[in-house]
Length: 568
Image (cartoon, rainbow, N blue to C red):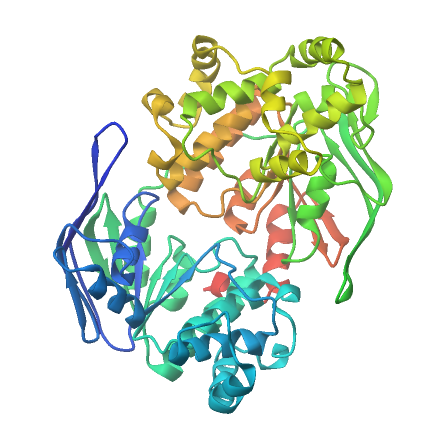
């Protein structure tokens, strides 16, 4: 049993401003019940879950799980006791040992008694916990994978193994924070079915934070609705989900119709991947398609189909083993291969925006500073100015272009590549200086208006933004330079549907206004239907369908994934 009574929690921003994350929240969860928590990004859902977990100290009220209670005066000792009563599953967490599936579970069982996962005696673990490990793997439907190494599991299998390890702790409650939001429908179905099975067979209480109505309707017995840190309603999943969706804007009445002009061409793309311990794992082959100007093209398919690899090749971040990716250079009749270093590739990249699945803002930098850096990379005259700087320091055009490529990589990946050749990331600032502050504010004003962002947040640091604000700021970073091509790798999977509708409408307006060609990966079937005018369906490294009938290709995708939760 879980009891939350009159819990409040404040956060203090760097400028001294107080933000009330939770206000006098009270809930009760019965043994064996699945309680859903819904709310927009920034409504307090994750803060409430972290408080119940015992990792967030509360300012007022009390929380009880089983026989353990804490309040605002409780010492860390009691918060640690609360942690032992609960298990949590975080959406983006993949903390697994490089062992087999069964050994991962045995490590957690061993640590439950001997308090050391890192020094597990597998002989002792097997004799004492072998039977229990097998029972847990059966619960999460991983018995057939018990001897496979964790590194070769699919995304859904990894998520279920994480759940298995949490169950090894024998928790009183299982806390789920956006389970599988980023996953494909097939993977999500596997995870949701595992949660149902765990709940039914162990009679364990479950709290599931999810802003997806399909997930709440499939899992929850009861749902509470959070708004600005307060519970505004509770009831059946159907009623609360309908109430939550009432605040959604209508779809903007804009038709994003592609022209007849080809601007991107993928020709005979082939790429093979190997694992040293597992042989060939993915082969992308016979990829041929063209993208027309102002097309909004979705690439869909199950996890592991090769979508992200293909998108990175379209962005010139990875090279195909065979074939080529061609772009029409803006304002010219000339085409260029994005894999060939040089000034032509820099011209393409200066008009290209890439938003990664694992996008991250600089944690301590202000929004304004990050926009100024981005404009320094992508300003219209950047190629000419960077050429001049490169000449002064003796850099070839090919080497300059190799540095420019790094500006489209995630920050950590770019830093790693520079470190490998003994260089500091400051070299990018030297070659591509940041934009002046006043000019940056002028450049971003209309983009902020389109994305419903207040100009006041320009001086906030990234960690002071809500989840929804972070996504829209990241989108503003990509759009501020007015790209002609926009590549999106499932960057909006964490957004609630109300906020996602805002982003979708903004993207439609912006792409129409500035004539942007978009190629995107998404698992959100509603998002695909609302935004796309064409879709490519991939599986196992191959294109199996290419259609402008979006409704039909999406329905085929749902059937292919056996995604019952989407057929509710």
